[in-house]
Image (cartoon, rainbow over all chains, first blue to last red; front, side, top):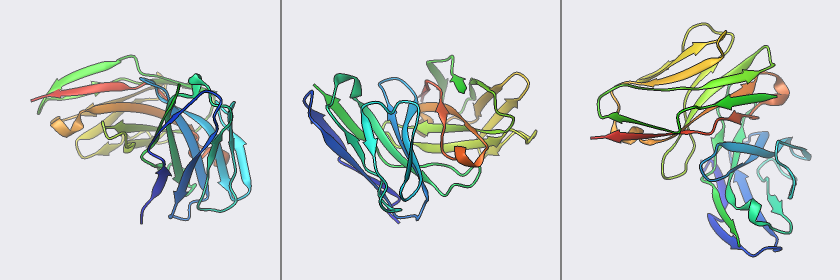
Length: 113
Length: 117
């Protein structure tokens, strides 16, 4: 079991560029999430999905898009990158039962310059 | 809507001593879950302990325990017999208990814990 795998681990973008952060999990979890962590701050929810084909906005969705075509994959798309999107991005998943913990990926550190 | 506040940006403790990290929260939900997550320099998010709000008994996991005061909306983490490996950023988080809310956590700002040998 690899758990939740995120790629890339680090990326530098120029303002206005676009990119996709990849996330895949091999635990057959229905629920998946994207969080961002700004320097010295807690995590904030960007988007989430409760199953293939179903996605919804979290607290800070502006500037991002997601898709969920399979149970395993939940990519996060950044369009027209801005310096305000400099952050560490975490993908997470959970089976979706009550107080089950979130399984986190190791994060992607993104800098927009 | 939920808010989680950690009022201690940094804390320090001597190895083998006990330290308590504070957390207060606010939620309009009647049922919810509370969590403490640890984030070492590796950046990995590690669940330390969790508490179900409807349970009065405080959760305990080995050297980690919580003091859950529901009326005061307080959820502090006590680390006993501190070890060098406990050094990390600690996040308090709250999640509504409803089925549509799985995994939708609200995090506090974090407390950096330093452990001195």
